[in-house]
Image (cartoon, rainbow, N blue to C red; front, top):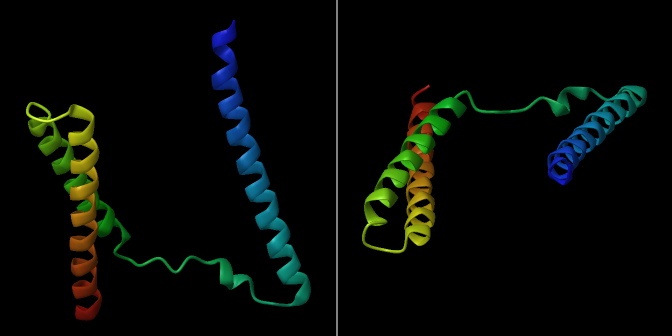
Length: 107
């Protein structure tokens, strides 16, 4: 019976966070409409290359996991996984930045 409290509390907290987020967002937008301001401020200005960025990042993160698995035979397993995932994830973000900048300049 005691094992049910943690998942129940997790989902209740998740519901509460999402509820507060959505109600606050709605109130903000209604206040903008009442003042006569355009609500287009809330439209996300995401780049059209977001999927390219995520794809490159996840490829490099997977490479980090694979490298960490190989290094875990030699070094401490936790340290190998932690450092390699962060290292290759950072390299992936830098590569994604360069690639998306080149694609944006090209268009």
